[in-house]
Length: 184
Image (cartoon, rainbow, N blue to C red; front, side, top):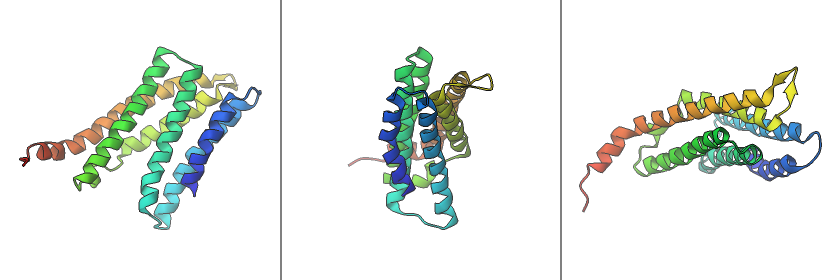
């Protein structure tokens, strides 16, 4: 239910982002932060109560990637700088590549070889905080929240590359083994 709620929140985030009221930045940041927290809560509940399903295992990462990709699109649309676009492209590109890698490894019966690593979890936290800051955009106690978000997004993009390489390194021996198999 929490995963489905995150998916339902995506069009709500888009509509709120484009509203022309003084509170829309706060509301968009709040919606994204709420969705991020439900992602964590969803995982915690699943582990705590041992409630796993094949559908949930499929839908949870899809919901996360959709929410992040949409937030990045909104931010880049409003702030179309070279760096913002580059960081967004790195993050979205890595998500697509790692999803494809996981799918391929699952077909080989090796999905466990590319399980989520600690660096991936750190990347997710930095990325989510960055996106909340970038959606909020306002100054708080004199702090340039948007500028902090820009730096955090750059850090998230670098962590994204690092974690993507970690996934690739974990899968590389299996990929090489599969490539060396004779074909009929």
